Image (cartoon, rainbow, N blue to C red; front, top):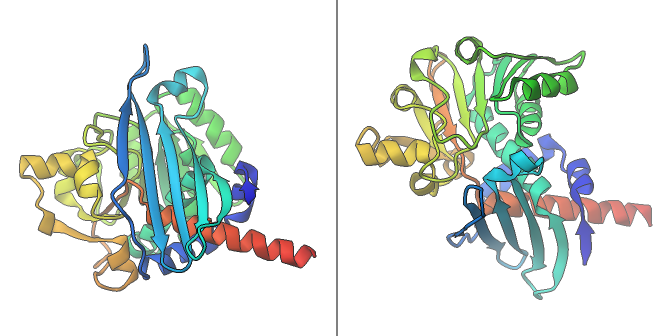
Length: 318
C-alpha cells in the first residue's frame, strides 16, 4: 500500500489537472452515502467535529476520509482541520493508498471553488479578495488565479499581522498581493470574493457588493456558521457544490429557515453545471454566489488523480 504524505499530495495535484478531474467525476456515476458528523467535546475549547466521508465508483475505487475539525487549534498554533484518506480497490477490496487527508482536502476544496468560478466568475475577473488567512487561503488564491486572469489580490484577516505575512509570502512578479484592514473597501473593489473562515457572524455585507461580482463561500460547514448576510443572499444567483449544502451550510440553511430563500431559488450545483443541466453566469452584471461544504466526490476525484499520477511516475522511473 502506498503512503502519500502532505508534500507528495501538494506536489502531485496540479490545480488545472485537478479542476478538470473534478469536472470529469462530477459528470460520472459516483455513490456518495450521507457523511457522518460527530460532535466531540474539548475541554476549555469549542467542540470539535469528526467527519466520516465515504464514496465509490463501481469497479474502480472506494475512498473514505476521516476528518477532525478543532476550531480551538488556532490558539495552539495547530491546523484546525486534519485527517486521513484511504483509497481502496473496488474490484478486490485491496487497500491501495493512505493519503494525507488535510492536504488532500485543501487541494480539492480550492479546486472545487476554481471549477465553480469557471462557470460563474466573469472571464475578465482580475481582482481577488481573500477573506481569511488560514491554511486554505493560499490554495484558494492560486486556484482562482489558475482559472481567471487574477493579477491583484487583497487579503483581509481578523489578525492583520497574519494577512501581512501571507501577502508577503504570495507576492510575486506575476501576482500583486497586499493586505488590508478595510474589509468594506476591499469587497467593493473586488471581482471575485473568496471567504474561508470559521465565522458564525456574517463578514460580507450585501450592501457592499457591486454588479458583476462572484462570491465564493468556503468556510462555513455547519448550520450555525455564517460568512455572508441576508442581503448577499437576496442579491446573488446562488449555486452550491452539492445539495448537502441546503442542510449543512448556515449561509443557505438560515435563509431557508427564515423564508428569505426557497429551495427552488438555488440555481444549481457542480454536477448540474458540469453536465450542462443548468447554466452558469447569465450576464455580465450578474452577482453570483457559490457555497461549498465539501463532498466525498471531490475527495475521491483528487485521490484517484493522485494515485494514477504517482503510479505513472513510478512506472516511468523503472
